[in-house]
Image (cartoon, rainbow, N blue to C red; front, side, top):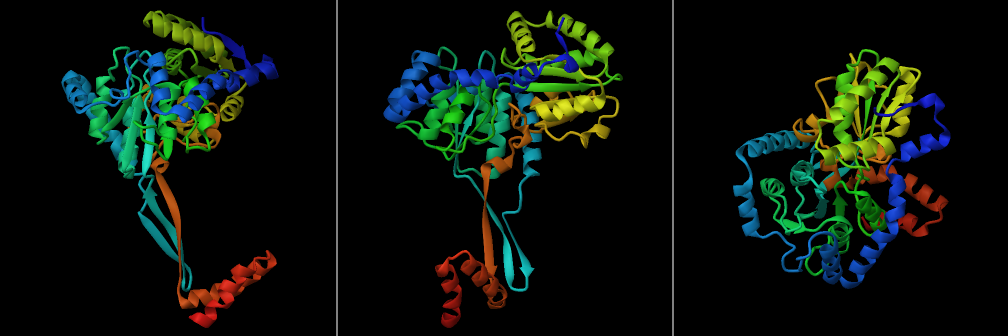
Length: 434
């Protein structure tokens, strides 16, 4: 049976542990991440290859960590037709969603007569994308990262992804990279991949921004690298909440509880409901469904559900919503009869999935919304990956002579008040020169 925790009976310490989820473990691996980053900062390729051989594959060299044209070509032959059709549909939907996000290249509005202000939008020049692998393969993450970068117009896209023990990159991910026009893919995982892209080495180019979901080691590396490079949104171990009420089918709730739980033993999957009947039945159904999974995935689910997840029993729907907004989950699935009536009450969630036909697996692969989302409670202040992650805004201003006349007195008054005489002089003397 999946554990059921009554919210009213949980201690403040229990709640704090639950809300921190795998972030607790990140603190413990910071020294390991620091060791790798320091070595790469000092020795470049030498450090990268040392840790690639230790953690990725033993045959890594500075000459073979970059995916070759031949490897890209081979991937096209290895992808099965059914998988390619699925990838193509996902690619179309994700591209469409992100194209709709693109802002105007420049906007300039007349605020007062002769006073124009606005923004110019430009892509970040060089971005580094981290596509995880673990025991599985994640071409879906290659889709979710490369497409918005491509749509945004990023000039140089660098991808790092872990190889298998023979030094091969998962072929479907390579096909996706090609579809997005990405040619620089490196066979690197974990801290060494992030450090190489953030710091730059003789082989791996330095980037202006990193983004992509990571293990707890990668999340620790991002903390350390913050300030050296923009590390993007905090995307660590997967997490989800299923919101249920008395109308929810407990079998659906149980099925969807396992979606994020199977990502790994550090994943946090919760079912939150005020219905004791739904909680009890979902617990039993989840236990039954677990037996249908392969052993290694079942063990992932069981470990995560015991450490960071389970079923939270509240006293009311409002208390469930309050818990969710405080937890700020990566994925929120509203599995009630009329989910639209609750959307306005959700303040903090990376993504909000509505109704019984919208499980998070569909959003991960096919709908088109981005599945790279803030974790660890950072949905309070961060958003899903989008084209905006790969764009920057420059403010633009323009004054006509009449506009200058309108702002000169205000400018001088405030400059003098703040004791910046050069600011004021630039206005006063300008009138004599124009």
